[in-house]
Image 1 (cartoon, rainbow, N blue to C red):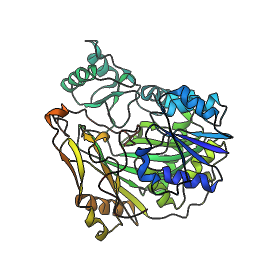
Image 2 (cartoon, one colour):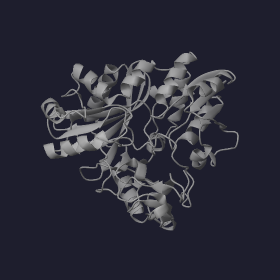
Image 3 (cartoon, one colour):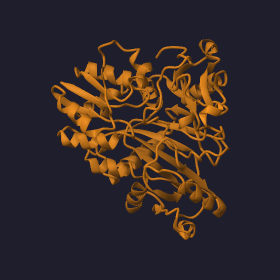
Image 4 (cartoon, rainbow, N blue to C red):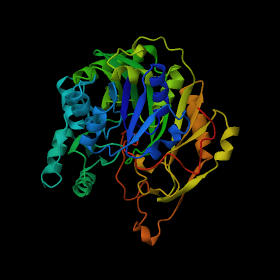
Length: 449
């Protein structure tokens, strides 16, 4: 019996391996770059995960490997980049999984907006944008008004997202978008003002359980670069119950019947508004925070779902644990990543702060306006999400991510600083969807966990 993982998010592979082991299911990881998971793998027994290096962008090669997998029982594909490939292969091999059309819908932000509008769950439709049509700006203003968000229907990591507050910014964003390579199509939607959160949910047989809500603190407009996350937000019970009912309706509207979801929403004066629906567990350290704060390994539910078994987490009483918070560590300037200063101070600070590395020494850091720019994460915990946030911010303030300027041979001008020439990052996922570097750096975690 074997469960195969087609790539993975930056963190969580260790938890997933332990979950599979507890359920008696060997775990096989297919990856283009095993070094990307070094931080996770080096903390596991050598036989916890069978790592197979292959070109995971070659669908037929992956299919061949799956066909030769002894007693293949489930396929997990938890990243935005490989999600649709994983869904297609799940269907091809007759494995348990969502209908691929549901995941295609979830990955199309404009289509989701329109589906929610038809269900009466949002105030506006999406408006498709043709950056090459001179009449586009006027049509978008009529369709969604200003301020608005202009973004890629299939974007990830806050890339190719623009906040436009007036017609001048709209014209500039359309011109900039015309020169970008998008993963999907360009569209516009209203900018829903208010604090942004992420609902961490598990759905099975069409019923959704709200596991908790993560806060999402971002840099000032117009970038909204993700910087701090904490879990669980202490909503009063009536509001929490109302959110759970609303989320059940939201996910049902797109036909999402099973598995984790990471639903980003803005809490406006008129109620919650979906920012986007990510049909997976949250990225960065969201999964780790869930495990610690709920007192269970939530990745067991991921394995059970892949096997077509009702996850025990749907009904389990949760023992609870410490709240968590983490701060994404960005350098002050673009350049070549050289390491992290201040890690030696973390053991003496409250909240058991730890550094989780993402980039390795020598990696290029070009984009500071979105989640491509962070080199690692400072994690801390405490009795409440508020206290954990204070601990994480204090620890992050003691840490400096270091870069050296690009050399002339690098061919980079180093203009991509927050507030510079990079794209505006809006509310999106900091999930590092595709392997772009390894999790090994000169700066190691200051404490375990």
